[in-house]
Length: 262
Image (cartoon, rainbow, N blue to C red):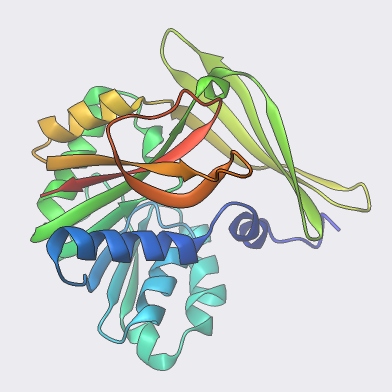
């Protein structure tokens, strides 16, 4: 089963929830600005799953996806853009480029999701990236990011999640507390005992929320807000609702969103 599986399709099923992500971005922008956003740039876009969701939702919406990897962009063109209507395909552009260098027309929303920005391991590089984002936003633009943490984020652990047809494994192979650098892998296991090991590997620095907020301020952003997930009273787990907050719980693991206004 592993030899027939597609790692990008498995990733989308295991990791991404573009419907929830779209709803958060669309609703939050409208709450902040008082009107809807129509232009979006998806940095580190991978298969451009979110860009496709964006143009699919409204006929006025346009999207630009940026990624440095031609293989994943080609996959997205074939399997994601290929499923869009002809009108929607006209409103999406995929660009192979470095997010530190790319030049695009000003947009209302720029996304850096799935923690991919953490490949920038120094404050200088992260600040340069945030400055590039700031420059690329329209005057009413908002930058959206996600972040993760909690005391389990610093541990060398493996977490298994059983999904339909396969098991998703997130492995934090190593963490260096002196530099903040970590190595993580995604593996997929199948019912026939076959495995797809290291389907994806990430060499990151685990940035903290105070650090990210400070660097965003240094890059020129204003009104930087952390959106924290609420708790389901019955289960004690996250309820999928993210609200502006200045206080977060010291959970073993958490995921939140950050918005930074131009």
